[in-house]
Image (tube, rainbow, N blue to C red; front, side, top):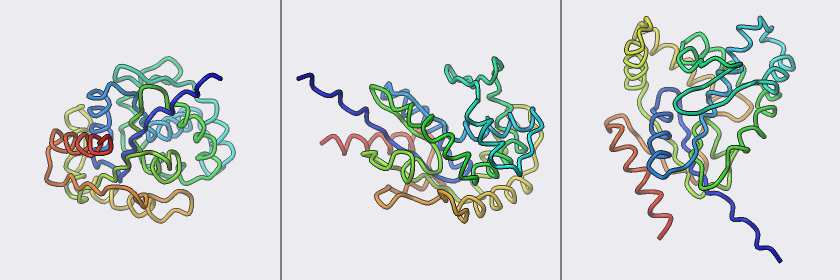
Length: 224
């Protein structure tokens, strides 16, 4: 009898917008030599495709159909949609706000669920999102819920946008983050919340390096 292949491990890193999930996930993945899933990018890609194809985003089934047909690939810091690297475009506030809206649609979440789980490949996966530990990978051996206060997150997002040459207003970013937090935590489908067995990690006063090291320490502890 052929021995079954071991299931690749997953570390989930959930949390609100601009909590640093993406940066931390990529650095942890690089350190471990694992794959990374930016689940938020899939929703942002869906939102961007809706904008570009003038899809009526109040029609949930139309949005879900588009999500199922996304022609996308990730790699080397790029997010390629229909042959174009749209990594920077995905980080605009217009796309982010629409992504938060369509992410609340049950048909859209169902359309993207299997695609997200397909990222679980050897040697392991860092899954970054809002429901990675609660819905997509509920059996993950390590679940992190990364938080930071809204002011810190707004300042981080402001710096990211300015560094990329994108115009931004700090007070507007803060208001948008607070509105998005409310929408994400109160939606009926897969609301933003920590898994029951998640470790809460507050990065408000931690550097990126300190946050990454803490996640790696939590992972090392699971191996003992």
